[in-house]
Amino acid sequence: GKKVAVVGAGPAGLACAHRLAMRGHDVTVFEAREKAGGLNEYGIAAYKSVDDFAQREVDFLLSIGGITIEHGKSLGKELSLNELQSQFDAVFLGMGMQGVNALGTRDENAKGIEDAVDYIAELRQAKDLATLPVGRKVLVIGGGMTAIDVAVQSKLLGAEDVTIVYRRGPAQMKASAYEQEVAQTRGVKIKHWAMPKSVIVKDGKAVGLTCEYTAESNGKAAGTGETFDIPADMIFRAIGQSYVDVTGGRLALEGGRIKVDDEKRTSVRGVWAGGDCVAGGKDLTVASVDDGRRAAESIN
Image 1 (cartoon, rainbow, N blue to C red):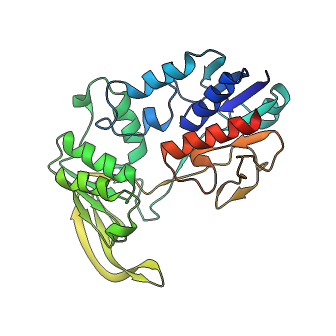
Image 2 (cartoon, rainbow, N blue to C red; image 1 turned 45 degrees about the vertical axis):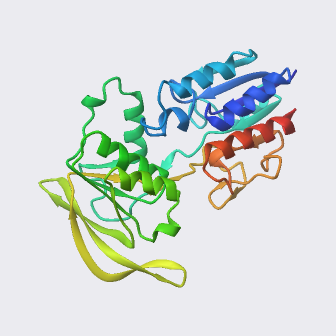
């Protein structure tokens, strides 16, 4: 068997490692965090993934042998692509998205504004949910799964009033119709066709948002000039994540993510990639697993 390096112990990386180990290859997985599982462990709301599901799945995948996981190792810090290429016969990159998109409004880093992904990660690792801070009036900006997750979770943790602000209509939300219904049946309000314009700050803390109504213009959501204020004592950014290039510009990108072919090969010979960090991905666990499987077959 060959020696293969896998960067990232998320769904894509673990699927790739598992398939390669089944084919008799020796796989080392390098993971930045202290637990494997990626977004399944750190990124999905607690109410959706119970009974330590993610870790039980990791244990099952590792039980076949042939896979070693090294924690606290991330590309661009403890590891370099050159180094991995010199030590391994093949490299698979599945490190997901490390950047969080900015709101682009004044005072967006004021106290009281949090990244939804960080809050969910903290929530998933908390031993006692009662110790987590939660606002009475919670505002969530975004329209994807993470926005729904943090909104519903806030409601379940005891928030009185939770509102999602999304710049377009229900049909354009990345969160499925089912997810939107889950939120609304839990008492979450979804305010469509509105976008944040500025943060309302009092004594150094965010106390609400000034939002602007939007309308579709040439296929894009544009502000109408009409504004309104929403009070909040906790505001979550859930407007998506971005790929951070940790290879020093060695790989060709497409739309800000790693460019790959049908077999998940990158522009560099001997390097494959999959999951959320590649172009054209669906940002779903099942799609990431499929990427890992395809790459493993190609590597094999």
